[in-house]
Image 1 (cartoon, rainbow, N blue to C red):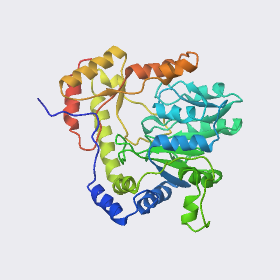
Image 2 (cartoon, rainbow, N blue to C red; image 1 turned 90 degrees about the vertical axis):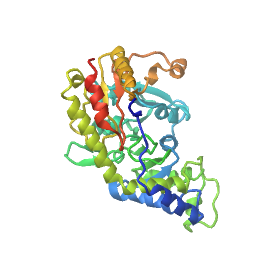
Image 3 (cartoon, rainbow, N blue to C red; image 1 turned 90 degrees about the horizontal axis):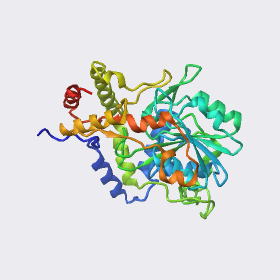
Image 4 (cartoon, rainbow, N blue to C red; image 1 turned 45 degrees about the vertical axis):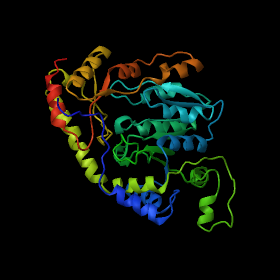
Length: 378
């Protein structure tokens, strides 16, 4: 039998071990050391983010955002139902009610045209999720946020090195537009550190408090900069920052970002070109709005039914190839239905039933996957 092709395989550049050794030899292991600072500066300089703070996960970054927005009981937070549970949990932990928005017909991201009808006097935050690194309509979302006085937290977990072209024709990095943004460096992402994430702070009003929350609610960072003669408990917070070993691993990845992105875009294009000729799958190719770039985070298909998707996954399994479905709608989850009345979000439910993700990683044998797909008759 052919060698197994899994859905994902983490890519190592070859420098990770050496940088981790450097971090260990520095004897600064706990975080916010030289590798942490290098990574944060990299993002600030490359993408123009105002301030970046590495976190142990994207979940941590979202939890920090919820604290910074002063989300609490009685507040409502609007987000797509088609997203990972961390998007919701970060705000549920603060006591918020989650209001789910349906997906677009052409893309799993939130339907921006439905947003305003969901805003109430209790709305505190809108959380656009840039699914597959494809931008939501941020002009529309930011205009609504300004009109109604709410915060915008971009869930940019999948959106590293992806851009949005605004109404003036200016291309802006995802994560730089909302008040705050959260990125992921989980091993399934383009750039990885095993686990890991980052909070992006785009408004100066949040910067000082964010650093305190990041450092367990203390002004420890200010103390080490010599700005205060002792540090103490200043605010709520937690141990959100990663160790220097995680940051060292991430630095090796960032040094190879352009190479990784080039390879991933080539894989994405090869899938698209090949499947555009497939008699069945050409009808189910991914779409994206004209305002967004493609960062090649994933390649997915949206089939016609749950049965058809299951058949394709089972067929590829016979070829020793793993394809996977993705999110189950959060509005239909047992946890949410224990707390709120059922709602119907037909587009989201369609993606939950019909979307399939194909294997996608730097070192993959893509030709074998395409060959197998060409043998599937649908």
